[in-house]
Structure formats: structure tokens, C-alpha cells
Image 1 (tube, rainbow, N blue to C red):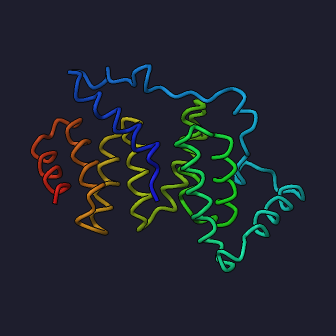
Image 2 (image 1 turned 180 degrees about the vertical axis):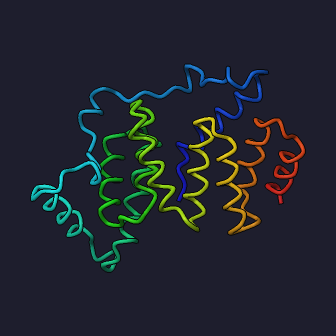
Length: 210
């Protein structure tokens, strides 16, 4: 499971960063900027962690749990993974309403999964709701142990935020799980370029090609 939306955004940012002398000047170009249509904001589904604990919320959660089909054999974690994947696909299509619905349902099905929170990091970033974005990012971090895809996606978001040192920590944590992970080596190579550490960048570039 990966968020190509987030990875593409970071890749664009990294590429731009290599073309300017002062990294603080690196900003997405007008073509790369993505904005949520105001009409979509009105139709975003509120995630479970932002809902009041009441009968209405419980009824909604019960309906989500009851919607799990025989396809998943009653496995809520598997159903949550499928829902999160739908959310990331919707993000790739810039369909934020559908993405928020899928991520919200995934969070109900598997409250311990980092992926619904990672999905909402994208949404809240584009809505410029930075406090909510930070909450979701921390919640994803708290749930990401030993999940390579989640660790790479979190590192990617930290890179987008300009926290390259922390991003390196997360990419390296992936290599602790799998020293040959090409995605982690690639992201480390690009991040070290921004940190002006060509020796480490070249090392990870070579490892990414193996």
C-alpha cells in the first residue's frame, strides 16, 4: 500500500529543491499546486476521531462494520486495508469527498491502522488545516511500527514539511526491516541531496538500483 499522490508531491518538491541554490526558496510551481474545490469541502466525510460520541456516531460505526461483505470473511483489518486503498486511489483522482469517506470507514474497521490518518494528512494539508494535519501525522506515527509502506509515506510527508532529518529517520527505519527496500533507498538518496550530503546520496542511489 502506497500513496502515489504523496510520493509524487514529495518527488516534485525534491526535484525543484535540486534546481535552486537556497533550499528555502523551493516552492511548488503553480502547475504542481493542488487545491480542493470548495464544493468538495462541504461533502467531506468527518473521520470518527472528530465525531462526538453519541447514538448517531455509534449507528454510523455499526453500519460501517455491518457493511463488511463475505469477500473479507469477517476480517475487519482486511476490509480496512481495502477501504484505505480506495481512499488513496480517490486521492490520486483528486476526489477528496470519496477519499474522506473511504478513510473514515477504514478507521472504523481498523482503529489501529495508520493509513486512514495518513490519507487525512493529505486532505488537511490541501485544506490548509495544519493543526488537524499534525494531529493525523502524529496518530499515523503512533500506529506505524514495522509497517514499511506507512513508514515511507510518513517520511514522505515529513519531507514535504521540510523536516528532512526526521524524514531520514523514517526511511532508515524501513531499511532496518528490509535492507534492500528500493523505495527507502530512493527517498534517502533524494533527501540527502537536499541535505547536501552527496556521498550518502550516491550510496543510496546505487543501492536503489540493485
